Length: 303
Image (cartoon, rainbow, N blue to C red; front, side, top):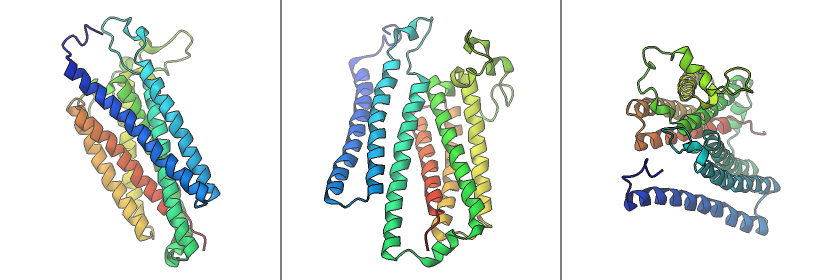
């Protein structure tokens, strides 16, 4: 460790320390902003049983998220990482991706719970537009609703594959686009290397999770599929009678996808500077959020 960071001074360490410290404090603050109001409103009887159960679920995942953060950081302190010559200490890509996945679960659960509360309140008060409800219950929207869920799954998978890329520093392997080296697909011996195969493995499947070249190729491919799927969904929406809210959501989703593709390519060709990498991660969240908006806006409403 000393040889790797021999030029580091106290102020350099403080910069790293305070980023980590702030991240932990913000996480704890977020937990309190849900726990304290939830306890207050539940005790006063202002929350339905369904909302209470959802709040408890979100708080439980938040607690698990804190554990996963500790478990992830712990993996970067393993002495086994430094046994090979030239080894660089890093957290496990598995634990980093799991930590990211739990964050997405918390975020998605919070968004859908809040949106359900607002919608259900309108329905109970009789202020939900009847015309919109009729459009959402129309059979013409059913296929579009189903495809929006498929795209949600694809976006989520792409985002999680980005966790593997980050954990393996795979963005630094091939820094050009659209090619990877001399071709659009890396050499077979790089994609399916024997280096990542263990004696107990049947096949070379471990490359998908541990080989930086394969991780980057998979993330690129999934990102391209996501961009195409989002564009197709947007084009399909032009032929479907959608309420204004859903129409705005699919337009926002198309804009977020185009922005995210641009950020992804820029992050790659500029060799993953922190600012662009963080923007790319935020772009993934923006794309997911716009899809959450669309999925919720397409839900049927009881007449």
